[in-house]
Image (tube, rainbow, N blue to C red; front, top):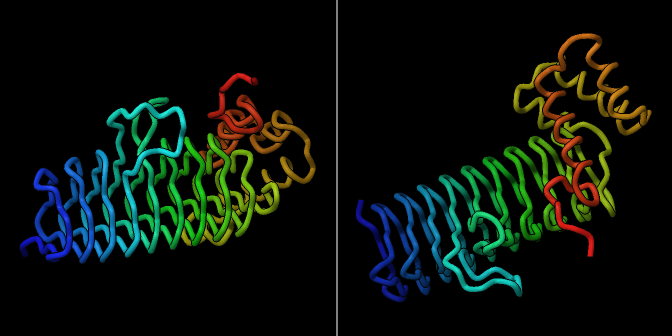
Amino acid sequence: MATIIAHTAVVDPRAELDEEVRVGHHCVIGPHVKVGRGTRLENNITLTGHTSIGRNNHLFPGVVIGAEPQDLSYQGSPTQVIIGDGNVFRESVTINRATEKEDGITALGSDCYLMTCSHVAHDCKVGDRVIMANNVMLGGHVHVASDATLSGGCAVHHFASIGAYSFVSGLSRVLHDVPPYMLVEGFPARPRTVNVVALKRKNFSSEAIKSLMEAYRLLYRSRVGMEHARDILAGGKPLSPELQVLFDFIEDSQSGRHGRGRDRRKAA
């Protein structure tokens, strides 16, 4: 099927649109934009900057992708937004291109669902199958691992990392890294339990879930300390893959600034 462009849309002739792309009324697509096969743009969408969008994405009205970062240090370099396949971007989602401070790329994977008014700031890296509910706000340089869920209205501090299979409850203030497999909630957000529902849906074994529950109890309830908890859980054997991921993540978080492993900035 041929690409269909509404007569009121403004598409720069240098933009690269693959086959079966649908562009609705009053969309604006800039010269350095690439849109993959089967992607559908509803009305009033802006794609600008050096933006690459993969196949079979669905963009709803008011989406803006590739605008300049909201960072006063930005010097106008041709930084990028790179997006995978099969994502849904609901009304008024915004994704900003990167600054020059890291690799120059704001990236989002495949099969994600970003709900109304959610925001992905400059230099963020978002994995696959991530769900961001209404009004979720990611600060700059945030990393969100695959299969994480962020509930409505939560705000994530810049340089924070959200671990795989984690769940951030609505209206939470995320100042620190969110460990994988955990459910966090609060102001500021703290681990409250293991994200058991998601782990069952993703076919984690009962043994893996049980070991993560015990890890949560030791680390966040008994507070026995990292090394003691590791020794108890290992029982003289290597840690399970899930526990190894959890402990590696926590160790990295503790090595950074304010509980954010990626925040290596020096204090002012």
